[in-house]
Length: 315
Image (cartoon, rainbow, N blue to C red; front, side, top):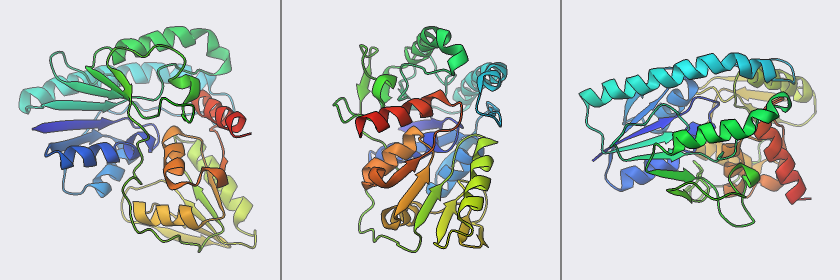
């Protein structure tokens, strides 16, 4: 049995939450092939060096430098549309070369094939858009539902109870046919015997689409390089060998293995990160959400909503 697992390249979050899915497939005896592009592909190669990999056509999404992402999102639409078409035809060509028994797509819209058993992973059944595009949310949610309907199953990485993380993103309406809540998907699931690493007072975890990732990195370096307490900034750049640099009180590292990152999260007094959904799941699984300073990507409505939702829920 062969499974093809495909992660969206929109920050690292879609790739990190595929880690427990891939582990589950391997336990069940599947021959797993992983497909993605950019940093997510590099990240998964490091997590599972013995698996086979395929590079998917990129969407080429970029954010604007300012707080409003309306024009950036509009300019991204043609690139996203081209990426969807290209990856759909990539899959058709791939299936002519190799047999697949199961396809798992984490928010890659074009990866479906009639007659092929497939699962779609998403926490956003209800799409959030920037303020200037709010009127288009029902249309975009229906379009997303049409992509979901092409798959036999939809896995929602959340719980159905009041302790859910996604709020109105995936709750409050009837679930699509084949959709189910599967619990939190975190790369830190199953890590045992972790000892907290208290070397750093503040841990900053970076991810997301450029240039906002780099802008946050520069801001945090300026904020903590002379703060008088050690800070670790994990850049979220898993390409190539691990790189480390010291700038005053700041240690800047390109990436960390899961066990080291989890140990630092457990040992730090404060964690600063984006309010991306996969990061939130990691924080919950480790019991670290209460000490997190969440920073939504400016103009990224999903992250802004999650920040507001958790702030109101937790008082």
